Length: 166
Image (cartoon, rainbow, N blue to C red; front, side, top):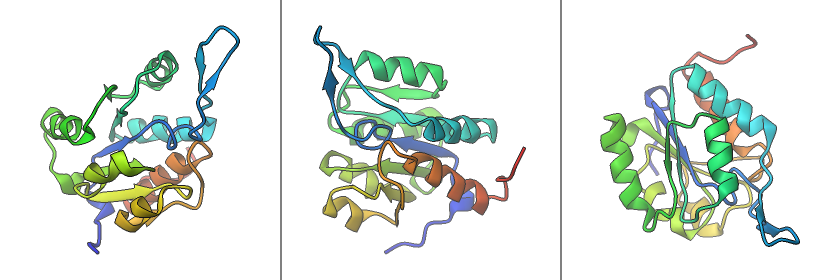
């Protein structure tokens, strides 16, 4: 297993369902899809951006709730309906002018494997599929949609000497 250098990370990219959310897909009585996002994850993403890191979402699905949340958080690059995800990842590298070693990717399930195998810091959420945990450099203590993104951001920013009360 590689030893990631967290000081090199310039981009934090993540899946949505199962990472930014707990993975449940809920429909209301009108058939509208609802998703639940964690405020601490939102703080982590906002803090990463404030500290100069770029942020991205790579999701195989598309939902209005995701568009709203990524807009609210001002996520730098959003890839929806991305299948296979590795194509979006390749575009992300070009868009931000970075290499694999400078990217953290947070995933939870099989569609994330290709990107996780390339990212400099591969992160699996605590409730990820076993294959994803095995491919990861780090497995969060927090589960998807319950602070795993913030935990990852904090770990990276601490390694870079940029975490603390502001």
